[in-house]
Amino acid sequence: MTRFLLWLLSGLVLGGIIHIIVILTLPALADQSVWNRVAEYEADNRMVVLPPVVAGEPNPLALDPELTYGLCRVDLSQGPAYLSGTLPDAFWSVALFNETGIINYSTTNRDGIGQTVELGIFNAAQTRLLAQQQLDIAEGLLVVESPTDKLLILIRLAPPHQAMRARFENALKSIRCGTRS
Image (cartoon, rainbow, N blue to C red; front, side, top):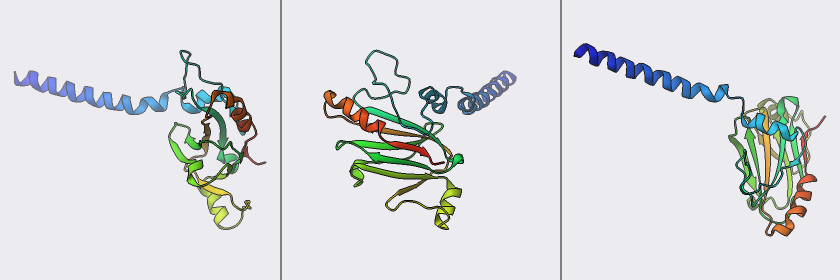
């Protein structure tokens, strides 16, 4: 009887260890990361307006149908990234996601920024160059340091009425996003 309980306990411990290893390694093996899912939008170094979310249709990015979205993919290993433009006078937010979908930085128009977005995004090495004044930046640029090089920049706009959605989408199209060559 003791031998049976020992085997049972050993099997449970081994099963638990295998279970934990599989759970921790599975995300690293997944093909459908957030970074790969948004590749189809061809948003590398440019702002792309995402199609509106329609109720009852697939929503792979889990977007809110009431909001208008702009997306830009940047790779800081190619140089610092910049986000620049004017957004409508309504609620908006800007979020920087790393390639696994975790937010590195976020701001809204309620942070006292107003309608104009002037954001410089740098990795740690670029921030050091900036501190040593080896990189020139425009005055008034909001500097953000990212711990990772691959970033998704997502702008969310909340049109007060559906009739204004087209105007908000046009505002998103005018936003400049990407690394400067």
